[in-house]
Length: 151
Image (cartoon, rainbow, N blue to C red; front, side):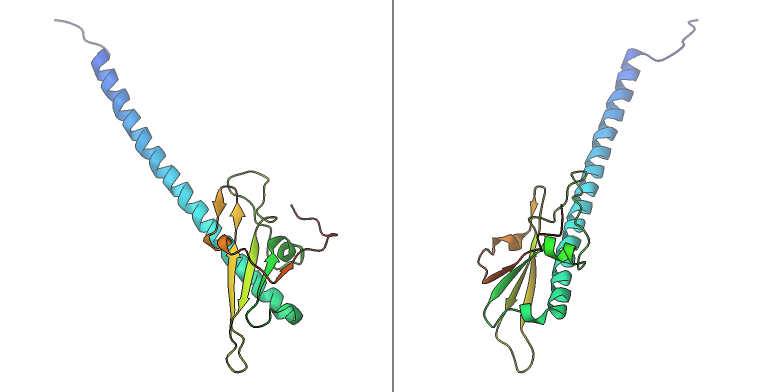
């Protein structure tokens, strides 16, 4: 009678293969979750920029575009003046999305006493660029005060 202790090489190899497959599946799930989380954060940033632009124009009615005009409000201006918190890049430590991002405000045809304003956001953050960044023609651009430092 043999005294059998331990595992054979084939059994160990089978366990390693199963563990490898489980690791690959776990990595794929975690990376998909991280990507979805980043996409949701970018969408929140776009909403924040649009909301910040809305609040900015409520406080600065003289900056509202005329009928048929489109203006650009830089995100750095919105951050400087406290309408938006700094847009931290989730993929690069210490980097922000403040300097290249902006709000786009278009005024259509007013109806009665109601202004027809449309707000969009162009977010440029790492490798992510909003679809609304394709709009490149503006009648006016509102930039931050040079004395305000924003990264």
